[in-house]
Image 1 (cartoon, rainbow, N blue to C red):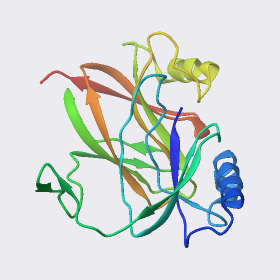
Image 2 (cartoon, rainbow, N blue to C red):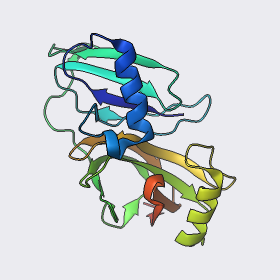
Image 3 (cartoon, rainbow, N blue to C red):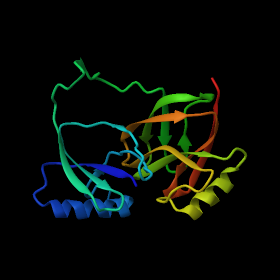
Image 4 (cartoon, rainbow, N blue to C red):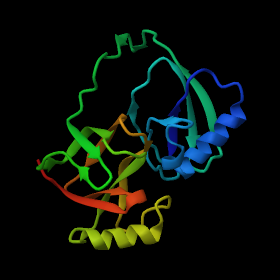
Length: 209
């Protein structure tokens, strides 16, 4: 299960109406984008008992979070306040990512190879014209993109990956012009970037250090 975050205007006077709009936006993001809520991403699909992380660009104001099944909905407020962690300030300014992934309607641009094993922080940016989400999966070596797509399509975009396919990271629905930063731990092997809405699969390899 994943969670999507929405940027709101003022504090909503009718929470139920906003929740209904959020659910409608997730079900048909292209039709509802710009009419109701702006999607700012969030952690991708999370297996039961697991966890996922994402760094998002919050500005002062109100936000909503909704789980993919529509069961959990909450409104949050972001403020400009100095934050401290173990006595140290959180860093300000742009997030220092070590790679960028660009989503467009017909293409996914990945960081330049070689992509080395280890922990990375990738910026995921939507340069397209419609909201989209993206998953990164480890796949069996030697599987062609068409074979991977067939397996993933059979399993369903919101289901657990089939045996041999491991979800390693991802980002929930992201509106055009927005970015989210995703930590990703990669071991040597074969991987794909997968956009379920357009059935797009882009393979990449991770090499040892």
